[in-house]
Image (cartoon, rainbow, N blue to C red; front, side, top):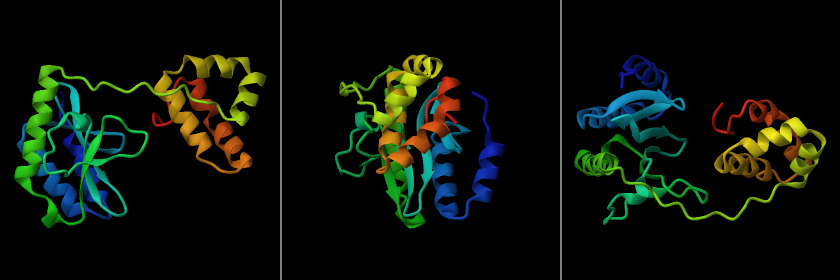
Length: 194
C-alpha cells in the first residue's frame, strides 16, 4: 500500500484539538510498521492492505479505534464500545497526551497485526431485520427506482440509513432526512459512504 503521509500531515496540521495526541498516536502506529492513509477523513492504519486502526478526534476525547477490537485480548478492560449498534470495533480513549502509553498501544497493535495476518474474522451476531419507518415505506412505495436501489444496498447499508432516519423524533425530520439521502441511495452508496 502506498503511504499517504502528505494528506495525513495536512489533517494533523489542520486539527484544532487533540493535535499533540494525534501526533503521538501517529508516531507509535508508524513505529509498529503500519501503512498510513487518510480514510473517512481520518488517519487510518493498515497492514497488508487490511485496516487495523483509525485515529478519531472527538469533542471529549481522542480515540484509537481498532476495527476488530472485539478479537483483541483486553485483560485490563481498556477498550470501549463505539456504540450500541457496533459489533466489531472497540477503541482506546485518551483525554491527554500523557494518557497515551506507548507499550499498551504497541501491545494492542501487535495483536491486531497477528489477527489480520492469520485472517481472523469477527462473527457478527444476526441482527433482527430492520423495520422501515413509515415515511420511508411511503417514499419507496411511490418510487420504484428508489425502492429497487434501496433493496440493492447491502443489509448493513440499509440498516445505516434506517438508524439515521429513525434517529429523528419528528416525522418531518425523518422525511427531510430521507429526501436528503435519496441521491446517495440511488447511487448505491451507504449513509457513511459520502
